Length: 410
Picture 1 (cartoon, rainbow, N blue to C red):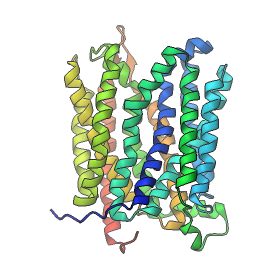
Picture 2 (cartoon, one colour):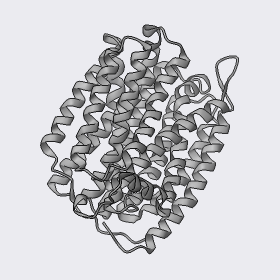
Picture 3 (spheres, helix red, strand yellow):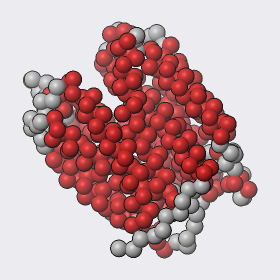
Picture 4 (cartoon, helix red, strand yellow):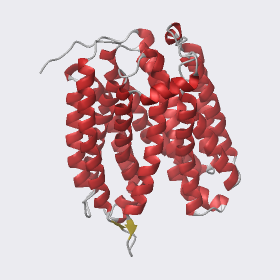
């Protein structure tokens, strides 16, 4: 198997990776906090489960719309300034969430937070692509993806602790203050990211959006993004209910599952990134797809199971997921030209949010609650996820073939 030598990061690149990972951590944590705090928010604001579901989905749909609206302008500004603009709005939206005293106020706060927060991830990926060579991007994506694991290990327990000590408002206020410190670090340490502005730009932002949307290679990448979003958004919303009611795991053990899985994936993400750069991104993706399919089929067909066995299965499942997402992100970073990276990533983020929201809705219609509280037909979700993984594999293979025929580019 052919290996390539890994280009080391410079000192500045190491700082940038840390800053980008922190920003991803803040955005992901803000989104994930809503789920464990729901049990406190609903009685405090006297809202129904359906209203709370609307609050949660409002973020995803506003983030998706925001990505499309900003895509045409995403390559017309210094990416650092664009990042700081949206990050400022995100911090203000998070603070508003912490200060909300009614359903209507919280709903508006989540819409505002989604409008700004939904664009941050795409700008982060555009900056990572601009500042790192193609042979470094597997490691970069692996390190940035550790933000998801870190939010489980560090963020969720801290948020739950603060809400138990005081109330549900405190985690959001603390998140806003913590995020503000990170934003100031970005403003201080990150240099302007504006090399793309030196190249010719299209006159119309709407034409720029249209051309980015309709390019054949881009459409293939967008289809892959939609399919990859299906699995997580179909399985995750029902994860805790499935573990407690179907697998017989105590509610008290859920933090342990999240903690151990998160700790494992913190180390796994960078290793997957290194493997993608050294042995090949498509090879690592194929491994991740095979492992994901096996583990999804096992996970969605389980009965009562010991805690340790579930932790092992959950960890292997996340290894599969990371081994798919990281190399694909690195591959897709080479698809757009520098003058279209911002628009391409904004559209991708929008598609991810919208397809994920749709997948959650579909999953909600597939499963049903049994008499004793167990989830019925959960195995059918697994079969849908496997089918989407197989279809995605075919599309990723086509993308891999197309990229192999292109001249080498950064």
